[in-house]
Amino acid sequence: MHFERHSRIPALVRVASTVLALSWLVPGLAVAESPAALHSITTIASTVPANGDVNPYGIFVVPNTVGRLEKGNLLISNFNAASNEQGTGTTIKIGRTSCRERV
Image 1: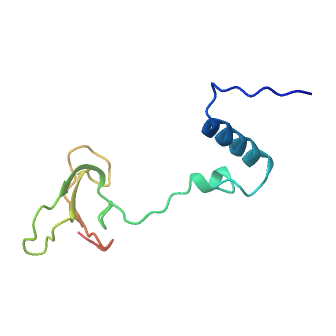
Image 2: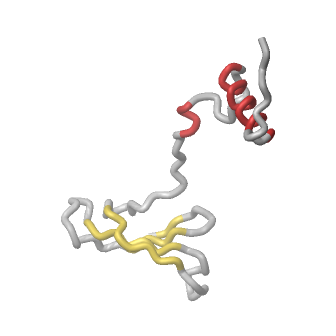
Image 3: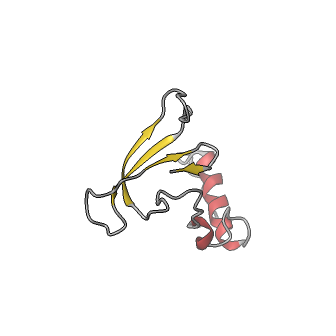
């Protein structure tokens, strides 16, 4: 069997194609072991305060430190009350950059 070398296909493309093809044949070469690993979600904070207000409608990044608000904190307003009635939310949460929260 005789293979011809195609000079129109750059060497890098041929190498990348070979590596990609081999990665399907050899288990463990892929970055993720399973599709589930690509879709894992980790909760680091919640926008729901103790009173149950929901539907975070406005998010504001604090530009400068003032009182209890530190530069970089997030202010999150909840538009709905726990009943999910629109416009009846009463809370603004402070999302700390260190992942600690306050209401």
